[in-house]
Every structure is written in structure tokens, then in C-alpha cells.
Image 1 (tube, rainbow, N blue to C red):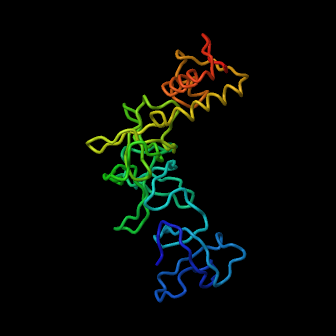
Image 2 (cartoon, helix red, strand yellow):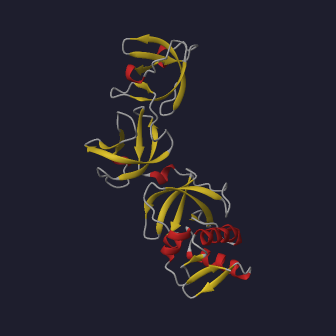
Image 3 (tube, one colour):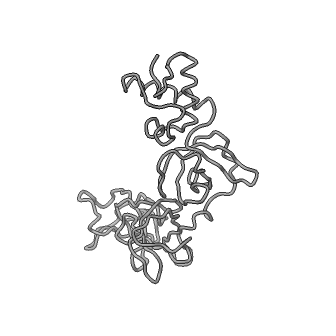
Length: 280
């Protein structure tokens, strides 16, 4: 059975003037056969060969195959740019010739040409068409019982708020990354590693870009030593340095920097100076 919106491994059944028809050799339903247009047919393809293709619907809503790989698969989240707006909604560039529609009812706010938005793609059961939605929160899982404080996770920033950024955790859960935990530039659509900071009673999840506690100190202490060695034994960073400068130099927060410096100082591996730190 063909799977619209995902990669399928199909067999080349027959060649025609417009391309190859692909499908399952044992299928008794000719409606399961899908056209791979000539422009996507590999030169070496022959009847009986298997081929990995992506399936979607053409302008007449017929299933069609392509050897191109889109920027998003069905039931996934991804950042995509708006290339056009019409009476039907906004159209996104997802790497295929036919743009991906976001109907107006699926827009969390009116979309604008040239802007990027994190969307979720799904198969509309009423029309059997692939569509996208920027109302991503309704596609996220409320049950976060699989997560534990301290877990390393994948984050996708999808919305800026007064408190920070709403993020998608492991493509399943909603989380919040506070401004106070951010020490690098972040844009909507950025994917980054992070850590579970706190799971609240209301099931809302706070995340951070760095692991808390002593586990985070040792590797960052080593990073400081490595940077010192690479910079002739001196770094112009102190307790009073701008947090942004610390992040630009070491990719760590000021709080983590101070903890790591404290460990190195107690171990007598560095010397604290008025204008920075130096190897002992």
C-alpha cells in the first residue's frame, strides 16, 4: 500500500511515454500504481528494479512519485519559507515543484512572503491532500512521562515569547527556553541540543542549553584549559566580563564559566588576574 507524504520503496512495473509506473508487484489494485515522471527517472532504471521515492499529490490531486527529497515528511515539524500567498492560504517551499499549502485556518497568525515558519505537515483526510499548519502546539504530546530532569534532548525553536522561546522537544513535546538561559543568537527554526531543566506540576517543561550542576563543570573546565593553551596561556575573561563575550569565546554561560574557573583555581591549574585568567 502506498504511503502519501513519506518515502516508499516501490518496484518499476512498466515504462510508458510519460514515465515509469511504480507499485507493489503482487498488488491486484491498479490504483496503487504511481507515476514517476520522466524527469525523475534514473537513466539506469529498468522494469523490476526497486526505487526509493517520495509520494505526494499533483495539481489534480493524483498520487505522484519523485526522487527528490522534500524538506519535511508527513507528521513531522520543520521550518519552511513562504513563497506566495493567495485566497487559499500561504504556500511554502518544501523542495518540490508543487508548493505546500498552509490554509488560512491552519495559520497561527497571517503568514507573509519571505518569512520562515515552523510547521507540521499532515494528510487532510477530507481532501486527501498534504497540508501544513503553523498551529504546532495542537500536534504536540501532553504526556511527558518519558522525560526526566537532566535528559539531553533535541530542541526546535518555533515561537518567540516575552519569556523566551517556545520549543519543540524531540519532535513531540512543548517546552520553554527562558531568555535567562540563552547565551547565543537564536532564530525561529533553529535546531539545537538542550537539557530538561524542570517538569512542572502543570506538565509544562522548562529547558536549558546547558546541563546544570557538577556534570557540566568538568567538561567546561577542560574547555577553558584548551582555550587557554590555544591563546598563549591567557584569556581576557573575569567574573565581571559581559555574558555575551564569555559565550562568544567559550560557548558557555557566565554561571557555568564561574563554576569551571572555581574548580580550576582550587586545583591550582589557573591564576586569577585583574584582567583575565592565565595558566598556572
